[in-house]
Figure (tube, rainbow, N blue to C red):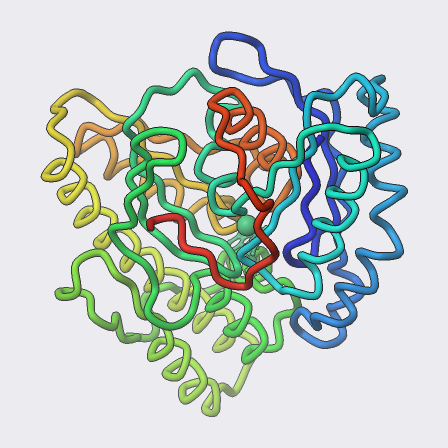
Length: 339
Ligand code: KG4
Ligand code: ZN
């Protein structure tokens, strides 16, 4: 049983391994709080935590019912323990640990980023090492996934996460929350070449990202918007700039991967996190992968955004390798995968 409450999704899932390196997801229940946060244009931690408390027991019950399993059938219970909003993490951690204690099952505290990192093998037979680009509302990282519990971060954002930049830009342009899907939708009505926007640290700092300057420039230019068409043009130009930045930085990350991993064969390149749903970004990264001998993998939408199946799946893999935490950790807002 996996439990996820690190941000604004309350989720529970029962997962069974197939024995061939992939998983059978018996249930994957997700309750999104988008409606509750929409009026604030972003996530309010206290509201998110209260909503987790109100929903988590129903969500776990539904996940068990849908999977046709009882608590006694489980081998272990895995909860996201970080990184994330501490008040939210506590909800999933406490209920997961309580169920495990009373049912005498193994409790596995899981790093949310490890859940994302291992999620592609839920559906695909995939061999290590592979390159992962994780682009969500809270994280933007390039990771070399060498094996279970063996991750090397080669790049990250030095300010805003990619999804955060989409959300903040949508807020500036009054295009609604969450911003990513709306920017993508309204970009279709605009001209992506109408505004020239900055691409901070594009030719330096390896595959690290910086997006705050881009957002500030959108804010500056938004003051001169005179029509809806101007707004759509600015949204389209923003999306195109992010697309160019990610394509360039991914090229750098792929070269770095080759340098660090002495394997010349075609390797998987996994793109996970909510922003991986963006069609423009997908298309560019697929073309780049072809050019640089990587096989692009985009986990399906239900395993791409925040979900509990990936937490259960990371739990299964840790359980099999006997990677148990001695003191069960405690929740943490920051928890890098790369030690
Ligand atoms: O992974 P996720 O569901 O949750 C976490 O943040 O962990 O990612 C949500 C983020 C939001 O910032 C949202 O605006 C962005 O992913 N997003 C998109 C798209 N769909 C979701 N960004 C760009 N284009 C999209 N189509
Ligand atoms: Zn996430």
